[in-house]
Image 1 (cartoon, rainbow, N blue to C red):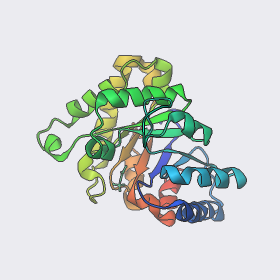
Image 2 (image 1 turned 30 degrees about the horizontal axis):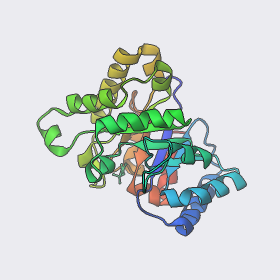
Image 3 (image 1 turned 90 degrees about the vertical axis):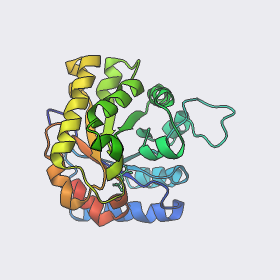
Image 4 (image 1 turned 120 degrees about the horizontal axis):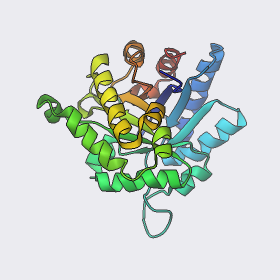
Length: 259
Ligand code: PEP
C-alpha cells in the first residue's frame, strides 16, 4: 500500500545448521530465479541462526542474490562481558540488513522485557540495522478482547524514544502468539484490524508521515494458501513466516503472491 515495499520474511528459528542453510538458500534462490520471477518491488528476507550468517553472506554476495538477511536477535550492548550474546555491530559487519527484536519466543523463553526490547531496538539503529519488532497477544488476552490494548502497550514501550525518521523505517510484525506454529491463522480482517491500530498509534506518536512509511507485517501460520488474502489488506505490508519458510517451494509461492 502507498509506496511501502512489501517484505516477505522467513524466520528459520533454531533450524538449519550452516551446511543445511546453504542448501536451503540455494534451493530458494533457484526456485525464484528458475521461474524467472522478477522480485519487482517485493523484498525477500531470511532470518537464519547466527552460525549460518557467514555462509549466507558468502552465497548472497557470490551469487549476487536479491535476498537480504538478518539476525534473530541482538544484544542491547555493543561489546563486552555478555557471554552468549551477539552485538548488532557483528551482524552489520556480516552484511545483515535486519534484526528481529522481541519475537514471542524470546519474550517467553528468555523473559525479555519491553524495557530490554526498547534498548535492543535502539541498538539495532545504532549499528545501521532495521529492527523487525515483533508484538502480539496470547490466547487469554485475545479471548478477553484486550488484544489491541495489549499489543499497543508493547509497541509504545518498545519504540519509546525513537525519532520519526527511525519510526518510518521500522518494521513491526504483528504476531498473535496463539497463531504461531499452531496452524491457527488470524483472519485477514484480524490482521488488518491490528495493523491499522498499530499504524494509528505510530501516527499519534511520530506523526502521519512517519507512520505512512512504517511497514507492518502479519505473522502466524502463514502459508501460500492464506498469504494472498492477508497481503491484500491495506495496512498489511508483508508477512513474517516461520515453519513455511523452511520449505523453499512454499516460501517462493508466498513471495510470488505480492508481485
Ligand atoms: C514466527 O515464528 O514468526 C512464525 C510466524 O511462525 P509460524 O509461521 O511457524 O507460525
